Image (cartoon, rainbow, N blue to C red; front, side, top):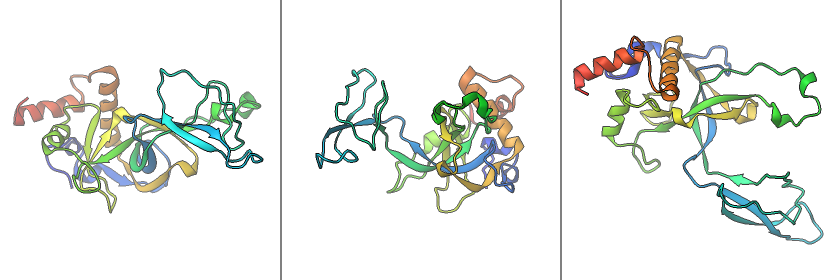
Length: 237
């Protein structure tokens, strides 16, 4: 399933992905969720008129780019379906349903007595995930150049991880974007579980890459450092 010159070879092809027998939203679980294109400029919706002057549940909207530097406008046209509090805007991003890897485990439940009377979104449970992007270059996706994919497979960048996902119907190869770590709601409508999750050995490697990405390096005796040493000895720096 995996070539010899990839990080998966440390734990072995057969020991990278395993069945998620418990069907749990756990660390290392492979799920599907809508991930926004975070490099795109978001848009905002502004109510500018009514389709019917007597109705407050619909409105004519203006779509405009949303910039963090622009002053917030006071919305004088109340719309029942689009309530806003002070300092809030409606923001829209392009998004795509992607395979995602659960990086963080479920957070401990908060004692309801501590949050009674506060908005649900203040403490609603979330999990941290990182999305996968298809490598294959075809009519449906831009993909990646082979030279770049080889460098990613050789673990030259902490933010990119080459992989082959154990699901049908997708690309042959994928790249995990750790620099796109994002929260999703732990509500069942926010994600769909696959049948698979990473093995404990694979999660250990992912944890080292997260450490490298956030803190800028790994220990000299880490699995990543040992692997990079073998790659440099074989392919050169």
